[in-house]
Length: 481
Image (cartoon, rainbow, N blue to C red; front, side, top):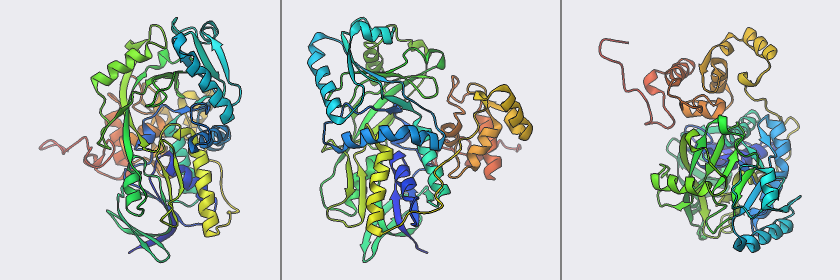
């Protein structure tokens, strides 16, 4: 049986979840369709976690506008959603005298974009701020409004808050077709038919495919793969600012940055690929990554690398965000080509599209919208007294499952039963970091699987790393249960 909504959002990344949350402020029936088993399972799960100051985008573009607005919105959003966010500042390094004109141009572009506090530092001034910078740094652009956020926390918090405010999340549903009808659209998925007065295309690297189901205007997205290395928390303070090199035609280049959780991150590379699911790292790209990052900081502590990963950016041929109503498809709205600074821009894009759609449908604001969301208690970060009280209230918080990150069974169980809760090992990892430490889930995986099976009332053989087909067990040994 077909179910009808006012708005259907396609894509459960940070953009789709931001749009859904902003739409949930209005009196609308909304669903979000995600092909993965969880939100934050595509591009949003594998990026730098940088809140960009806004000096890089060309003035007048949607990238420039949304970046600045999103950056300014982030502190309040982080407070409302109870997520980690820090204004740690950023430095763009100039490694030779020849690069000084480009650095000055970047400064002037930032000023035109409205970025506050920009300053060009000498090499010595930059090293005074960051003692581990390379001796080859001759100058740097300093942006105090640059920041860091956890991309998993942001996306999941947006989804949870949207769900609490009435958005229905339809996971494991792949859109296979969209057709127009008199009062809107019919979306066909692998599971159902969905009616919607308005559709929002926030499908990341697949946005051009969704676009072509409805519109004849040109759109082409190239997946741009970026490899990263994550280093242990013991070297998380190697730099305090986010350290960039001068950007190139392929992006903002390789950076070195602390993460919101206290690790050190280097990356990304930039390689255009054809396969929109191609995310394996390669030895060649990782070698290039480490050599390039080592130009920014001296004695890069690569012995502390605990994992490597890659993500895909959605690069549209026009090199700008495509945000708004498709010119030849009324009530079909898009957020396409959202590459860097997409994470930073997400709150602003959500507001922008939600207003367009609400105005089109004449939807009024709710009087009972809940803007806040409380994070899962972080046992390892609590003072001893609060930790003791929490364990007395719920003994599961006294059972440590992930030793590397000190994650308790209580946190894992809550992650499963939250709105839009975890249904896979990766879902737990992104919500509470179980499996993200030094051993990379080498010890805690069996226990995590047991908890998932128990709480979801599923056999162990059905527990997946992420999507269907990634099950870790195939059955029981003969004669044993």
